[in-house]
Length: 183
Length: 239
Image (cartoon, rainbow over all chains, first blue to last red; front, side, top):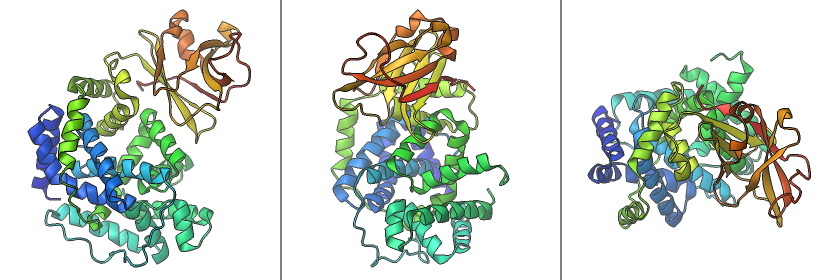
């Protein structure tokens, strides 16, 4: 994200925290489509995703004063709220019959975000480089978990490995990523 | 954080699994509850959120239905939340000096998790929290005690009493003799009472809090009828 875009979002959040509905509307216009995309990818149900996005924005409004720019970019903070809510919902439901075979993971082609700034691109490049250090199957598992919200059980079925193996791989992948990212 | 420290690694891996999204619902609830009282875990979660967030660039934006915004406005109009409560919460977070704990996530998890009945009392600094659990992975209740008023609030996380039974909360301390009832846990999101006023603050702070399964409506003779199924001790919410 560009610095300006994040500055705008941070300002909207600050003003929302003071009860400014105009600022909250601007925040909604700027962030709702991205957050809806994130939720929809996990839940794969448009009506349910809409309900969840409603809850997420109500939470953002009520917790805007808790946003701390020193800890995360505004979009990161909001995306975490959206993902957590969507993941809770996904775990409550029976495993989806995901048809991901037709869908490539687009690992080589991120959606070009006109708002993506240099720092963001650098962060993405670092993360991709580190993901590249994982064995390809493990890389796919990590990306499917994070972007599609697949559970360990769903990953085990999809990759035809025992759940315990998936669990171990995920843990090792996390440690490897952490070490690679050096943070 | 050192790779040689297994505890650090366990905590950090758990945070990574939480952010990655691969935990079960129970495990997710456990982490959500623990991060409220464990600044290190909360900080680890924030680090993982920042590390993995760039991947969201792979997820395209999708405009939500046009009627969603009016729905959100309606919901806010119907159940407004006073912003001073949230501000109160933040002030409290500041006073807790939990620098490692992101104020954002704290306020979010507390405000989302505890709800209004809790938020109304946030101006008081003497707050203690206990997570009652069977084992480390399964917190079932969060007990919070405001020592200045000795008001107690218990919130079930996932626990549902067996049909025809009630959960009852007890305070256990050798200074008190046998366990003393703190009341039946209602099915509501929160149960509050002031039964702790009968006990001195030092006892309140040092006791074990435990849940037993009793007949509907609670133990008839004021004694627990079986062993605790969940238990925990209070920890100061001010590190």
